Length: 251
Image 1 (cartoon, rainbow, N blue to C red):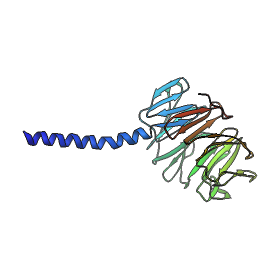
Image 2: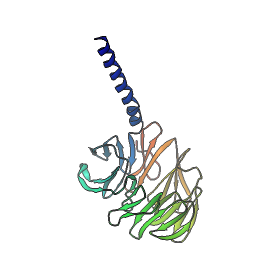
Image 3: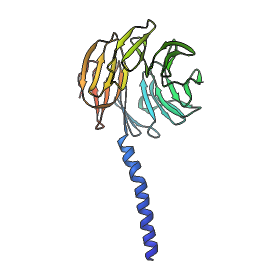
Image 4: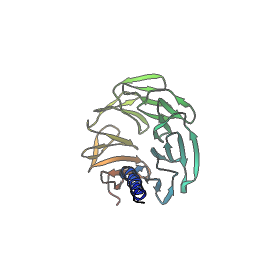
């Protein structure tokens, strides 16, 4: 009898030990900001809409077309109230998704778009526009298979209708190859009609020509921006902040 009780206690303690780290890790990474709101675990908060996803997503982005989320091998889109609009089985494991200007999914070994399927481009980031798929491999900016600009680019955005490739201390527009200066310690970027960056000191607002228009100090981990809903920030304590595009607090 004593052996059985001891064995039961060992099994119970082992189970609790196995659960605890996962629970702590999940709790530390539950919140993700997207344009228009945030996702906490599997619960979406977009304006007045609150609805549940099947599970916490790997990545998410939002646009006028809805909320796009990716799981390891699935891309889904939801409309108002959580209405399912799209489900796509991905041919490789998803890494990230950008819904704007048009949706593109970064997968292991390439990029996936709804119209073009899988392209085997070794992309670290990309932006899909009506003009084509722009991407960077960390050595150049490409449009499909055409090499446009050399540079150690890390991010590709569309600012005021123009493609902007971001390097560590500069951004380069295409077409035109106009350069703007960037703070070299930026680590996250998003855009509406202007460019917004996160640095260790806080959020920075730059106009399309690279002139600094404002700052919002603080320690932030995530940034999401769109013209309709403004700026969404996640601070290092897991709190969501909402600002106007002019960096004025709304709550």
